[in-house]
Length: 116
Image (cartoon, rainbow, N blue to C red; front, side, top):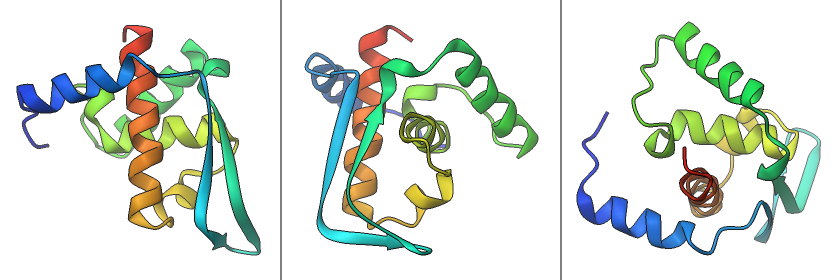
C-alpha cells in the first residue's frame, strides 16, 4: 500500500464537500462487459449499510488484503461502488481507467462526507 500524502487527503476532503449519495456515471463511449452494454450506471451509495461495509471488509480479509484506510483503498472502494450499483466488482475492474477512476473518486468522496 502506498503512503497517502497530505495533498491527496486535502483534495479528497474538498471533493467530499460536494458529494451526493446517488451518482449517475455517463460513459463517453458505451462500455460492454459480458453480454451487457452500459451507457450510464447509477451508484446509490446512500443505500449501503453497515453490513455491506462489514461484508467488504470480510471479503478483503479472505483475500489476504490488509485494510488500513477504506477511503484510500482501491480494493475497498471498487467493492463498495459495485454494491452501490448492484453489479459485480469485476464489471468495475474491466472499465476503462478514466471511468473507473471517476467512480472510485465518487465512492471516496461519499465515505469522507459520511465521516468514516
